[in-house]
Structure formats: C-alpha cells, structure tokens
Length: 410
Image (cartoon, rainbow, N blue to C red; front, side, top):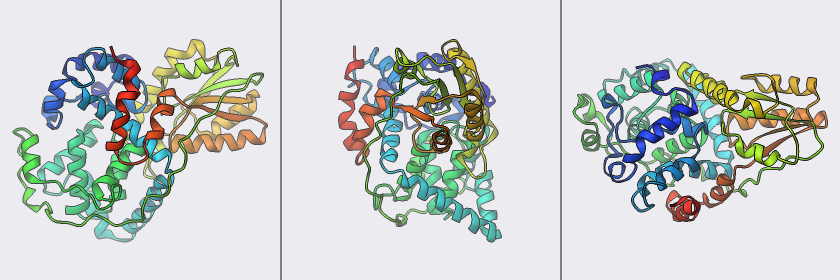
C-alpha cells in the first residue's frame, strides 16, 4: 500500500478515520497503544497524526468526538496523547531559540558529515536501514515507505540512533522531519531532545531489547538487538532558554483591502473567517507552501505530496468564502509579489507556530511593511487557552486537560 492510499490528504479521509477509530479510543487504546504492529496496519492507534499536524482535523475536534462517546476517565490515555502536540507547540512557542539552536546544530552536523567520509557512510547506512539491527532497519524502511512510524518505534529508533549508533541527534531528527508526513518542528525536535536527555535535563531514553520484543508482535527482529547500548549517559547541552510569554496573535483591522492566506500548519480556517465577520471581506486568497524548508536536505516525496494535497483540499472546501483565487503552493517571494500587484493591505492567516511557515510569514510581513501593509496572524482559541500552560513538563500540563476539554464533554 502506498503512502497516498494509507493517508489520503483530505479532511473527508480524516473524518472517516476518526469515525472508525472512535470505538477503540477507550480501554482498547489504553491497553494496547504501545504495540507496534505495522504488518497489521497499526490497529491499536488512530493514525490521525498527519491530519492533526496540518489541522485538516483539529485537536479540539478529536477530543470532542471522543468525549461524545466516552467519559474523560475512560478515554484519558488517548486524550492525553492527542494533546501532546498541543503541549509541544506551546512549549516551543515560548522558547523559539530551541528551534534555532537545533537548526544551527544540524548545519554543523551536516558540515561534519560532508568532511568525514566514514560518518557519511554510517549515516547513509542508518537512513537506508542497513545497520544489521533488524528492528531499527525495519523502522527506517517503514518510515521511507509509508511516511509514518508508531510513537513507540520513534522512541526506540531515536535511542538506537543516538546511543548505539552514536550518530548526531540533529541528523536523525532531520531524517525524521524529512520523511514523517506528520512531522512538525515542535513534536519532532523536542521528542528527539527528550530521548537524548536534553529536554528533561539528565533524563534520557534507552531502548531495551526486552521492551522491543514485548511490543513488536511476532516479527523477526532479534538480529542485532544484542548490540543495543544498555548503559549510557544523557547527551549534554545548554539549558533551555528562559521562556517568553505565550503569543497572543493579532486582529484584522477594518477598512483594509484583505486577503486570506492558507499555510500547511492550519487548514481549518473557519475561526479566521469568524474573526473577519463584520471587519473585512476577503477579496482574494492564496496558499503558502513551506514544506521544502523543513530541512536543508528537502522533504521526501510522500511528505511533499501529502502537504500539497492537503492544502489543495482545504482550498477547494473553502474557496467560495475566500474571494478570488490567488497563487497556489507559493513561496514567500511569490506571495509578496502577488500582494504588491493586487494592492493587498492586510494578509490574514491562522497563527503559524515556530517553523518554516512562521519564518516565511515574517519575511512576507517585512516586505508588506515596506508597502504599508501587514500580516495578521489570528491565534486559534484552543491554542490561546492551552499554550500558556506549557511552562514546564507535560505532567504539569496534563493537570490542565480537564479544564481545557470541559466544554467538549457530554
């Protein structure tokens, strides 16, 4: 099965998958969520993450559907897992320098790999799934072939990459971000930092052969497991920077020629249009695609195809409310040229969290400021409520979950 068949890039496919998974979101998920069973289609997890990452389906919608069927106590494990992405994004929004530091570290690691043929060869073998560690090699092939990995497999693979293969963690994180259809700067970067022991200082994750055997069914994965490092110190690095206040977003202004911009970070723009009611009528819309900027090595074809397909699906569904059609899958430079040509004074979009789309929006905003215009980033109410609580570890954040979802309960 190809990645396009596995993850059709449409909201309809997302809603269909949510509907089929709902009966399993309670006790079944709590009991079986750690089992990594790709040969059976990962039956015990929702595989909604590609849709949530691009917000073809939002965290709030998923929580509402689950809590319409189960109590919070019954579905607590699944609700928590769905909100990890919300938490990671909020944490990184308040510490954006962590993303910048990762990108700088990646650049240095790639330079070192270019200078060192032996390191280049070891990275190439790991990325191709040719290390001789059968479980790890299988995960690398699954990632390349489907654009997806079970969460448990992601932790195991990252741990083996860092502590057994002793490869730069930034290159491993980059490999994931290039190939995961659901990859985003926050969850991917911070997940790798957590495994390495950089996120929670001094606490790292070591993959255990017994744990891998327990949760991978009857697959032939024993070869090479004896090589797994069982004693290792966490990686060292600077402490996380002081957090800044959570973002507030901005509001559209009346009396300005307005266009709507869709980005791959939020493809459910209904809340943006609600904010525009009675303020400004969109005269046009465009779509910004920053998928290739996720990595200096570019994104894998399945990631690019899903992202572009998801953007086009959103555009087709909302076109009658967005004004005339502007550039599609455009770059920041193309959007800037279009704004100048059409006299757009206000480009309104959903708030883009730390990452390539946010960087592109900053570039567009600087160019528009020279023309007397501005980019307005509207913050989703869900994020406005949740992100300020991502101040420390997830276990402090989870204490806020009942309050965050209380309005969604039956």
